[in-house]
Image (tube, one colour):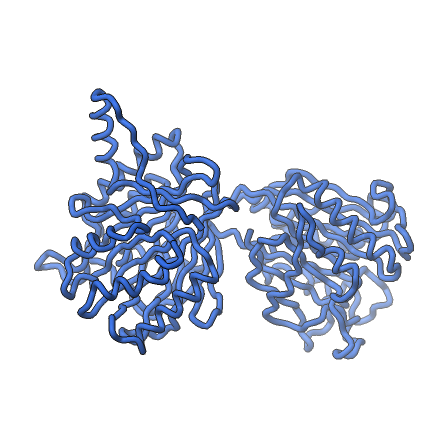
Length: 594
């Protein structure tokens, strides 16, 4: 969290010949641009509170909002809080703002406000409210009536004063000012013009590259409803129609043309909390933060938005008043669905569960779950050839563990070829001499291998190190030593990449010391088990084609990721009624955000 007093933009003009330049620069800026910093982890976390409708002197209801705010602020420790309108209503507006801001100010957190249509309906005007807010040293608002109370907040580098991102705040006004147009207010044309001037000027200052930006306002833009109706991948709820203005003055179109704004965040409609998108820009609601002072069908909460330095995307989630986290995602969508799947080798003695009888179901399981990255175990060459033919949208990499070519089981990895670009790849054996082909390690009963790829995600341009393996089922020393070898190889091969996914049949239960060795924190690497985010399916993975009693089944298949990755779902896929079984193992799936 940035605990320093917010700074004004630093402009030093000591000679009169620079006066014109100063005037020109300020004319581009809606308000005096303020700054906050990315933290030491090169992240900036924003908490959006919206539609609190706080009434001073109503502790039974309004106090619930303050309690929620205290909880969220302590949990998330943000760099900035942004209030997006309809924050204080009732009669004693000054005391109301003092109460609402206390949780933020007492924690020394910078904040900014864009007002809504109800904020000035009592005994203070918009100008008076912004004047009151600006008296707080932590307030970043500097907009005035002349620039429609709009603001820009610069987010500067964690280790310099270079601007790395922007936060735009727009006052969306209150109600229509035209007699023949009913409904709510709109962004004025001059506000759009000011934004265009500011955006283009700041892009020019950044060597012609648009700065990653977010925009905040109260009333949703007219594009919200259209975007939700046309986007089947919207996240969150829409329990009422969007109360957008009837007039569209082109702010969204300008954002698209300027190329800087990644997402727009509003309030206003208490029963909506969705995130959708249109033309590459996210359109999102906050989460209603009020109480029973006004209408709602939702538990109150807040939206959390995180941006990272030098990264043109954001991460977001909602936190409810009971601590529940929902709707966690990133934009542009970068969720990765990874699967670990012991296919079961083609064994002629498997009878009704033979490969030929279950292979179609194997492919269907992978396709139906829309898997992005797949780690397989026990594949024989003929099975690999079948999967290559049927999984047309995937590329794969792997070798046979006996001869390094086609003999023996593969630990092949598959990845969606329209999403990932292969940068590097390789294999090593789980033995004292990892580069030696077909060597059994330590006390292992079989040759064991690991397959790895370094991929670039075309959606985000981020690199991902993906490793898949199959531990020995007998050798205890081999299991423990393999865990240490895997960790060392990750550090050696990942090129310092922090986005790591490990899949595999480890042939050991979660309480085995080898798992503890794998998860032991080191200075440069810490892995976590994605099963902590269990959502559905059985709590075991190996069932031997249903022959093991359910009470005796155990988890031996895993997906691990680097600490810091967000795991939003973990499931074990098993259908007790399905015959034949798809394998003697139940595949595991994790949905991951880096």
